[in-house]
Length: 504
Image (cartoon, rainbow, N blue to C red):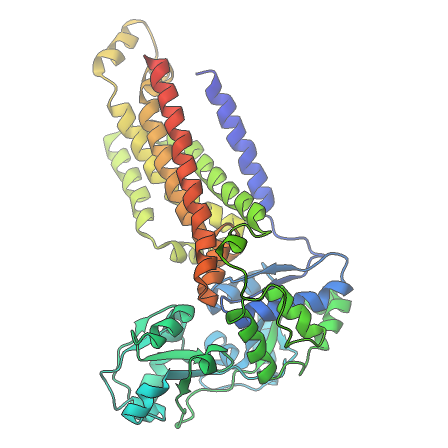
């Protein structure tokens, strides 16, 4: 038992190290966010590479932070300083205006929130619905009004489009559309339409795959959708904190037209060119360059890419520290409630309820509560998920200790705390270790979700692969996570065998 305090000390030190990593970037670092779709990834890199030469430290780019709600919350809380957004989204989704607002009105409404809108980039990336050309021609569908006359058509729409104020609900009401859509990730919807699994999907009008797959974009004949001109949504202190970088970003005004944006999206989605390379070529005036790393990069190259070491360290940190913190909190708490049946049932029930909260919902709630994105809310979420197996197995292990052994300790004059330290905990240790083993396996899998809020790890590849509908990149994120889970099982198996031998 002399090793237990040292183990606890190691976990405490690891926790402090992780919390240090979770601290937001310094005030001298410009933090640029992006949503989780191709165009936003590219534009974030354009902003970063434009600002970098005018700053003492390179900007921090937090890629693929999820939908509008998460990225906006990150901006509002100060976790990021600027990100590319669209005027229609700002007016209708963020400001909840019943009608599109001009830039001046948006600026006035955002100012009390400490935010501003500026630098129109020069292109409109609107929402639209599209379907396969042959299917549309067969049914004679040209417009959204025509679509509303075919209630049996299957619609596969993104979760954000279904839930947005300017999305499906308002569109269905305007056109009297009777269809009930199914939720489908935007990147996967293109394959679903091409294979005939769904008939209609929502698109961004600058998507490269519209022409590539020969889709028909349905005309918005009742003018439901507003314009979605790309702009920068930023914190009002950015021009004062980074005057030279902000002056450089101002020069991006009108620098990207719709054809240029479609071409950049095509290089990412159809040729497999990296986002930073696309941004660099665009800024250098070489937007149509094929790129040395175009689609020839296969699974092997993506699996052992230059980001593997960084992602592995991030994933290991998330798992080790969250499980360590859960053990530091869960084991003493389980020991404390063990003698009290009523309290024990309430505490275990509460930790069980945490398991029922969807991971993305829990992350979103923690972002709002903590006012931060990235490592800190990810660690908190993973720790909460790890509590149940650790506490439940600790209680189960203590329950397995026979009353005879407890009475023997009492007969030797041991106090309750001495019996717990010298008899009950050592005998319960194998079951407790099994709980930590289960918690570790859960954390390795769940940690991939942390990439949705900029915490890194193997999920970063999975999130990007979903955005690009890149199966090889998805595997390049999933395979290392699977291997890590297998390695953890092997380590715990060795520990359990060693423990059994020592007990014998």
